Length: 259
Image (cartoon, rainbow, N blue to C red; front, side, top):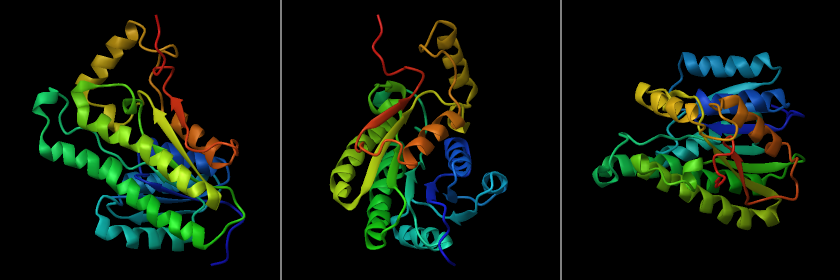
């Protein structure tokens, strides 16, 4: 297949939630999109159709990025879908298995968060970056890591999640340093409270709705996947071409210390 004039984005965990919002925003900004996720179902079909409805090509690659033995095949399929990758979005993620006392966090939940939210992205970035370096592109190239406000704000009801996201901050800075000489920027986005499946449990919704009623953040509303998607698209287009290794808060101002 001949190379498209459009830049190519590859999104892990892209079939729903924030990942879908990112896919659609990138399509709206002229990107062809390859979506990866662990299930190829109605949600995946809707994500793909949404990209196509926005006038761009779309492909789906099924696979678990936390399975390091499967990563090479996932990257190979993603790369071959449209002949290259210009933007990698490390988005796949899971929450704590149980929100509760930090003293009761299980080894299973800790390992799951670290494996999916951090380890998988480190080795995925390695693999995709090597291919980018070996096959230069005329497009702006970037790796965008979706972390969380939990990277800096301690949430003791989900400590293992926060630890994994804090690691994403250093991952982004390390690869930004290594890849700058190759012309590949690395950015971190820290979403705040976003309305997705991960935050849809009734107890979670009730807790945050109550906090908002009391004035939770300066922009006092739930964020949407589209809010995050627009941020990713802005970075992926190279709007901030003299920036790498930094983080961008899309959190309604939650990160600020207020009196």
